[in-house]
Image (cartoon, rainbow, N blue to C red; front, side, top):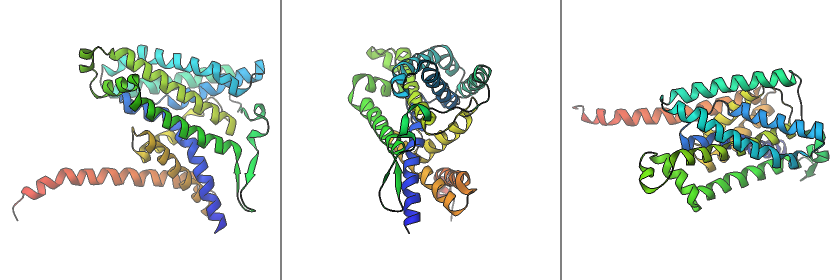
Length: 299
């Protein structure tokens, strides 16, 4: 019994990271209706930025965020103005293709600069990378894992409050609903979308930092992180910030339980849960579309 309880607790903590990595993806979809396939690669870009600051300048990763996060915000602003904004004019598919191409460019540039060796920020954060608290004789929780979950809750909660309680947040929501009409009330839709992209990239930078502190990464690690982010966002409900937290936790618990059942079941169980949730949402909607036709048919 304690073994399963421990797996669930570890899965919840792992889910905190998945919610963190999915935060920016969910935010961009909710306010801009864009699926950013460069999401994982941009997180790895931030991780490498922190690694350079730590390895070459001796700067703590936490202090390095003071440099990397504004840089990521600038990347988001430029990405919106130069790529996403123009891509959206060609339809919903063009931004997906554009960000897919961007991810390939980022991955290969990182490979050219840093090679294929794996890196980690664990050596630069002291004992935080391995310290834990003993809850019982059989259950220990990692301090970094708890910090990651807390960061996810604060970040998602902060974004939710920002969107609902601030004038800029309400402007972002209004622009997401009708970017053409908001201009009539004095809102610059282009500027609002660029700001939203900058905010999304800040969350991506934070996720990249925690990825680099808790695990190893290389220039091509972005693809797997994108898969985890996408699954967490879909399980929680695409575009729902609090749902993203729940989706990340569900994914983490599923993977943790799957690993307990079979060492090869870590990823498979998570994918199965994702597909189950996806089908559960698709088939009722299809049935609902067919129901009016069935009712009109004579008995």
